[in-house]
Length: 220
Image 1 (cartoon, rainbow, N blue to C red):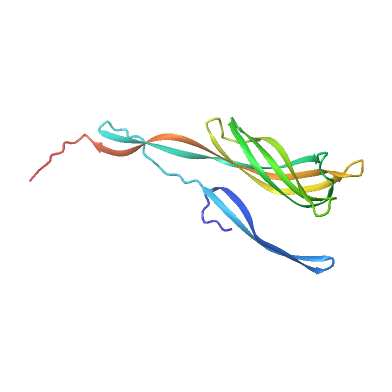
Image 2 (image 1 turned 60 degrees about the vertical axis):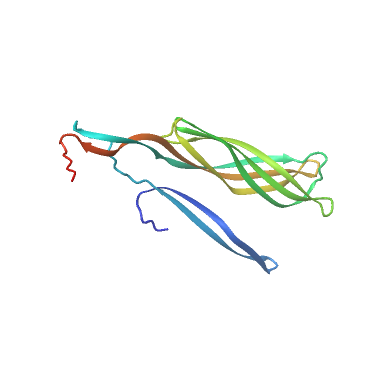
């Protein structure tokens, strides 16, 4: 992607799968076709000069209070969560896994001096076939997490937006010592994107006029 501006301070890249299909070419070969859309969102900081004072006693000022947002920076961290789930005693053993999916829930992000604490939970849903014919069961695996991420220029008065995305999911059955498949080993990758800003209030000049000269009004 060619950029028209050199003042880009941050970029957020996302992708979306438009479609995916496959076909068997030979008994040992599969041909896969798909379309992927990549989106880029860019942030740029522009500097604007504003007048806030005039060093002249003859100038009267009409001031205006404005709220501004200062961009402090951004950072990313990729984490991998692992857990092992055991089926309940009344659940049937796993024959094979059909598919799995995951989502991540952000519960809290707290800003401290130079650090951001992100708390959340990853939930993996696994669909599998059992020994019983034509029966499909599912298991929900919840993995809580807490991450402390270093970030420059932030303090308790800063605002921080945390965006969490699932990057990978891996679910595999595990055979126990008794020979039954009753455990699921799950792994999920999560990307954490932090963007920090800070709001402040400044006084700028809305209007100004001089009292150093007398004005005469002539009315016809």
